[in-house]
Amino acid sequence: MAIENTLNIAVLNCGYTCQSIQEARGQYHDLFGAILQPAAERANRKANGSQRVKLEITGWDTVNQVYPPSLEGIDAIIISGSANSAYEELEWIQTLNRFVADVYHNYPTIKIYGSCFGHQVVCHALFTSEGALVTKDPAGWELGVHSVRLTDYFVSRFPNLLHDNNLLLQYLHADSVFFGAQLPEDVHVIGTTPQCKNQGIYQHGRLLTLQGHPEFDQFIEEECLKLVGKRVGWQETFLEDALVAARIEDDGPTAADIIVQFFVEG
View 1 (cartoon, helix red, strand yellow):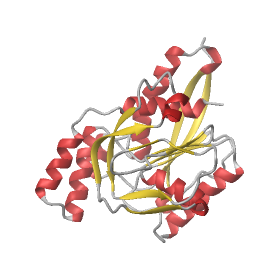
View 2 (cartoon, rainbow, N blue to C red; view 1 turned 180 degrees about the vertical axis):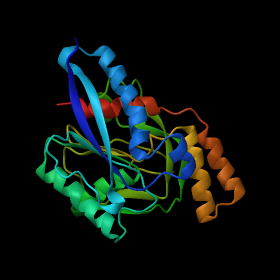
View 3 (cartoon, rainbow, N blue to C red; view 1 turned 60 degrees about the vertical axis):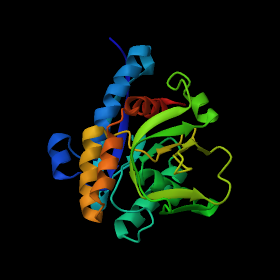
View 4 (tube, helix red, strand yellow; view 1 turned 90 degrees about the vertical axis):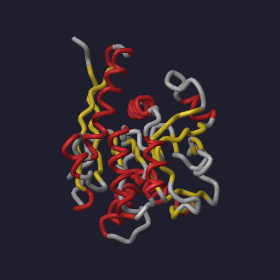
């Protein structure tokens, strides 16, 4: 019988999916489970014995400040996307920033991953003193599928998964992270797009973030685009261009493979 290591992953749900997504796919922790469980299965097919992993994924309603009662036994946290901004002075966001900083500084065995808002929260909570600034992007929205130009360093960390320097991801963000000073030596920006120069950060064994949404497939992205477009008043042609961009095939499964490999790396 194969031996599996169980990884306990706490997903911090930083918002709620809209009704159409909720009915079809569930909440944010369900979206992550839908991409990470198959990625773990792919990894297990190539693994031997103790290298095999089983993911136990649990969602937590951080908007209502519901967190794991104990961090004992938790191997990783995931910070989801959100309609809010990492710099807003809302009580739940301030609590979230403090929680992320506490995990990072006091629980060195717990890995931290964030998508979009989660990426921005990690940078805001941990690297403001190094000049990290999360703010509205002067270039506006980055929507649909775009290709990240990955750094050689990041590709070198996942050579079995990345065979070139490009990674196609779904996007839906108006905030971006800007670094005004030097990051710690072992924290690396993973890549860029023409619009957004910080597409995520990586610190071996501790941090991985992506500005994109690997947990979004075409259906989820389109539903979110239509909802946001209606809320903020996008012109019809602007929304249609974004919907067309969302229909490009993305590399979500590869990104999921990277996240799982990050969770198990020593």
